[in-house]
Length: 146
Image (cartoon, rainbow, N blue to C red; front, side):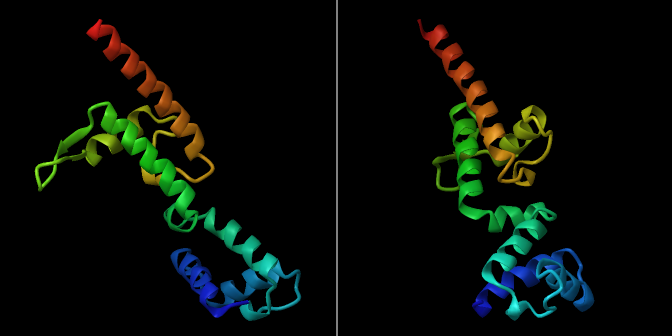
């Protein structure tokens, strides 16, 4: 197991306030009692443990669940911009008005929570919901143009 992957384990367990004994117990439970040493875990054991621990910390899910979740959030932000949630940036160009986006998602989103607190597993449903609202918004706009 490459050493650089241990950083994720320590970041998660620090966020979860694990002490040394709790870390060893986590390793022990994912190796079926074979070892308490992180470096002796197999790749599959380590991955399973990280996946399960990550589910306990939404902020870590965003960074570790990474690119897929990030792309879904970016899609939601882009759809919100198309629905007028923009403001003038410091250079004069239009940028997403994130306070409006966050408020909209918290009010309208099925989970009634902040955009960054939706997990990778929850985001597809939120994207679908925002896409429906966006489609209705666009259709409503076209009806006014005709």
